[in-house]
Amino acid sequence: MASAAEHYENLLAGVYTWMSGGSGARIDANRAFFAARGITPRGSGAALDLGCGSGFQTIPLAQSGFAVTAIDLSEKLLEELKTSGVGLNIKIVRDNLLNFSRHTTGLVELAVCMGDTLTHLSSVDEIKRLISDIHGRLEDGGRLVLTFRNFTGELPHGERLIPVRSDDSAIFSCFLEYEPDFVIVHDILYERGPAGWGLKKSFYEKLRLSPPNVVKIIEAEGYRNVTLEEERGLATIVAEK
Ligand SMILES: C[S@@+](CC[C@H](N)C(=O)[O-])C[C@H]1O[C@@H](n2cnc3c(N)ncnc32)[C@H](O)[C@@H]1O
Image (cartoon, rainbow, N blue to C red):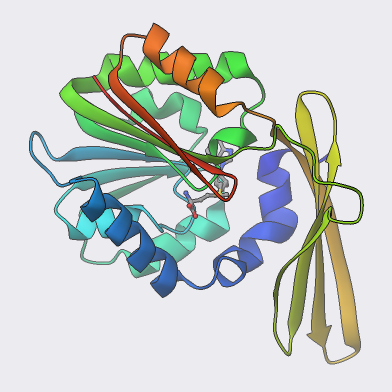
């Protein structure tokens, strides 16, 4: 089984921005997401983007005035962010997001871990540790934002092969297999080259996180005003210190 880092380097990072619908659309959607929740710099202006990828959250946060520390393991995706983030107040760090506190000095007013990054961690214990470490680094009134897929239910047989995106030169789909605590995600990519269609495939694990359980972990850590929304299988949690 590939680790998340290997899976991104071998297959996913090269097509991540394309298969997500393109950076412009994703950045606009996240700009609207933050605006709808009144997430603009009010305190120190320091923000953390944990598992930033190519910057779908980092870019709109930096454009709205945050100084963003953007952390990810994928060299390819961080290269994309380096290009699209020119001129913005972004510190790019290649490391495990669990080590975020090594890369910040002082407190931050916002920490985001969005776009299903949380399910890439290895265990609920790692998530508890992350939520606790973030609490220790947030200013009073600072906010934590998590978005992740709810894989606790199982898609029926016949619905587990999911077409993601295709065009004249590439076809991307994924297939889900369920284990008690994890879903095994098989990513399947056909790309058209000079010699015809070529197949790349790789699989990795994602945690089957229950959104209400994540809320309990957050509340037990002492966060307040914790809200949970779920739409089309995507959980959004916002909490305040
Ligand atoms: C589904 S992508 C989300 C990226 C971005 N937040 C978005 O919404 O597009 C998950 C990202 O988390 C990164 N990632 C996974 N596990 C990580 C870890 N332990 N530390 C740092 N980055 C990690 C991957 O490299 C990938 O860029």
